[in-house]
Length: 269
Ligand code: DC
Image 1: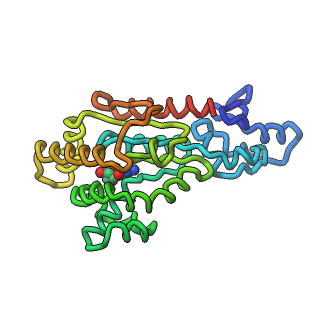
Image 2: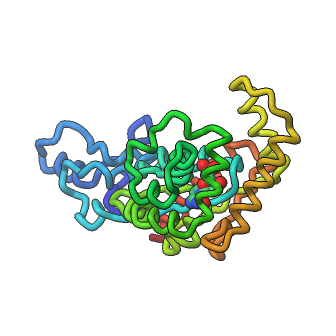
């Protein structure tokens, strides 16, 4: 049985390593009517089975609606975005980059809005704005994120995203500590400020910026200090989080470490 107990490996798995759905095998054994294996059973996407309803009806309903939250926190440019996307893609979970919420509020404040009003009236389309990745918006995001009423306005959306059916990955600063203290998996992805500044510098240079390492390092340190030093939901490592320090790691190895941890917890769930 797979970790979700509704998929059985056949005695003779396909050459591509696919496992076959127990319901499909039973239907076939009974001279069944199903012409194809259930799409839910590809081993690399077992959790994806909970997003697409099983066409053969073998998956118990409680499995279909199973909730599984992966909380990934850490400072800017540590690699948590890349890791979060990879975990979501691998397991078929939905992904929310919660920094975008604060960036969207920060962008509105730069446009003259009141921070609390902007947070309370935030719409999904606001997360699509084209300017959210700029350094100016990042700084504004970090500032509005220190306002308790702004954080409060964004809690419910994040918590309901976290408990959606089929699993969710949320990355941010306070996911494992405040938003989802009950998350099944908590990771804290970090790296030294110098390594993170160097990564950010390369990204900025690739997009034509002429900034220097010292300037980028100063920005990184200022943002860390603000995000970790605020009184409401500061960035910190949850007691039960697994630390992944990417300072001297290839990103592929960091992704593998995260996938292994999620896999381990899923087997226990
Ligand atoms: O992850 P990011 O760089 O896009 O986040 C931008 C800012 O938003 C970050 O400096 C702090 C804030 N933030 C936060 O306070 N809590 C979160 N869960 C996510 C981001």
